[in-house]
Length: 416
Image (cartoon, rainbow, N blue to C red; front, side, top):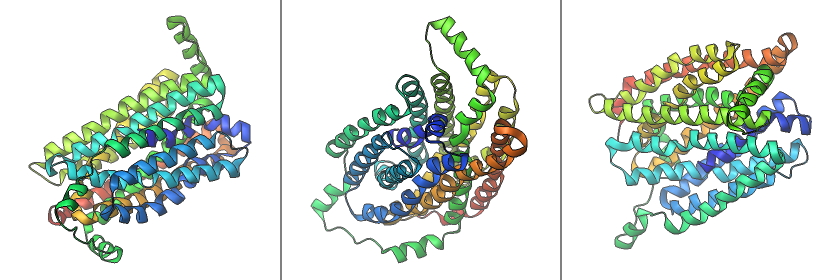
């Protein structure tokens, strides 16, 4: 949860940051994607190799402390370059979290519960995004965007210490009783994974879905502030009249988007894992078919939400695409753990995330921002971001094709 809170808080702060530091949309896209993805994707691989034989708990704890400290430092950046570099450093810290966590969770759970377990872990994505939107918006309204970064950084340092002293590492007991078996080197692991057709298709699907997801998340707030500012102000006035709670435009939008992304994202994540586990009892292909169906349907509700003129309706309609975008987390992470042998699991996740983050997080927001700059020349700022978001949503159709390709071979490629 804190991983994604620190990663996504910049999205709700995008417009205040843009005004304060005089940035263009492509620079915003690089701050929310490329800057983070460059080192996140690259460092995940060597850290994952360490996680194959090392103490995963120590890796997770050190990662949490590192990314949290640099999140706080984002609050003192004075220009684009400084903020870019601190976001890079956040990516360095977060690179060690997910591969080690997935490997550890797989040791904790039985195979027939993996999708549900991975979905439970992945609930941190929508919940963290919810917290980032709400906390970022409320703090930015009251104290400015710099204070928001400083406030959300501290809890991760504390949680990293708690994880270090309390999280169990099964390998410690195993090593006490017997010598550990050497893990394959990276070349051997890469050769094994490269020969697994299902794994390759899952990497492609993950990359394409991440492209859509991160591109959308990065510009949700910009879309509403540019196209629904009057409607948001009116809804904020209604909230004040009803509850006495007075929020600025950014604070109200953070609360609204946080609830939509958090609630519907959590539902989609849980449903995806639960349905895939249940369906896979009789048909293992469900781990690929369930996310494929969601990806095929996705562009339609995205288009409807962005074309709706009424602000409240647009916010509510955004819930369905958020739900569909979250369905694949549990199935894809669980299937990858089954497609890799025990001593290759962290590396398999790291390679999956390497391409997912490089293509998705690195290029998704950047592409949406660049298209927005191009479209804005004839459509204005609001129309530019609308059609940029709608256009890039159709990449999910290619992701669906990759999931369906994986469904054809997954039965023969599961190894553990």
